[in-house]
Length: 351
Ligand code: NAI
Image 1 (spheres, rainbow, N blue to C red):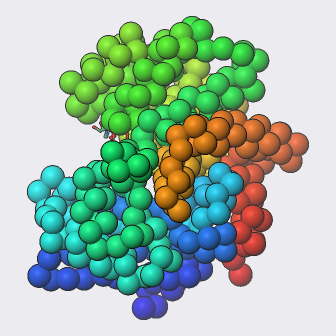
Image 2: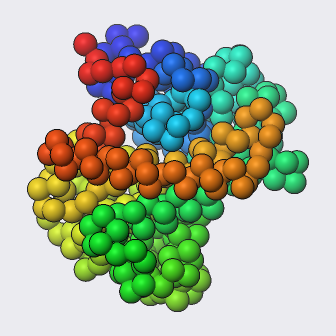
């Protein structure tokens, strides 16, 4: 246990649950970071991890991120996350998902699960067979369904806010945006940006997906090794974390980094490096809160998409406050966002 409490990403988590069921093949870790503002809410991520330590590191970083995200999104929710170790294409079974559902149910509502990478609405319905503490469920039954379109809406509004702040422009006509990742969020973001008159360059490891997204936005496909260094106004990472790193930072040719991917900065010092290069960074967990805002309106059983959209429309105000403090106090926006979130949940720098 020393390895857990002394873990570099531990950050005073309230509870960490290691769930194992050899018959169902379940190996999962549920991290509950902070419940000051409400039950810990966050997605279930299914992924193959090289080691269980990699899975632990991921869940700790992601659940703390959810505390900060939910706090700055103005939600009465704490932060949590679950990682399910396995290949989402080959290892999923009804038994596995039911077993995860039982583990979530044992927490009695301290953790509220939703989808994340590797999980679908159908999987959430399977988990819901064992617990009421699961969201992101089927819209046909009055739930919010797949959160990506609402996440993409939040990213669009965030890009508009960044463009206004940095370029003094009130519209996206002719603004060049490079999107990394033509998945659920990246594709919908491309479409929305295209409708606003932006010029889209989009890259994905899957060229068919990249082309389909480009077609929706009347944009162009770009190589996966070119997207981070494209000469654009906005770089929107919508695939992986840690894309702003020692290898990429020197070659960035964008004025703004604003996208959906979680944990875009490889290390906090990369936020400093972006600021030194005069590149505006919109903190990822503020930008990508649309999905959890969508999910939050399912809690209590009163989902209403109009209310969700109204709530997401507040994201630019939060960004404006972050950018103003960042300029006033000469601190990178990610540091300002963390401080604001820590204040909201009553945590300072851990002792
Ligand atoms: P997704 O799995 O649907 O799409 C990710 C896409 O990135 C895939 O098409 C994949 O082929 C592509 N990709 C992977 N490696 C790549 C690389 N090196 N270069 C270019 N493309 C690459 O995921 P989704 O749902 O679109 O989410 C995107 C990001 O946003 C993820 O990091 C996720 O954690 C984050 N996010 C998503 C939310 C949601 O509502 N879906 C909410 C908050 C954050």
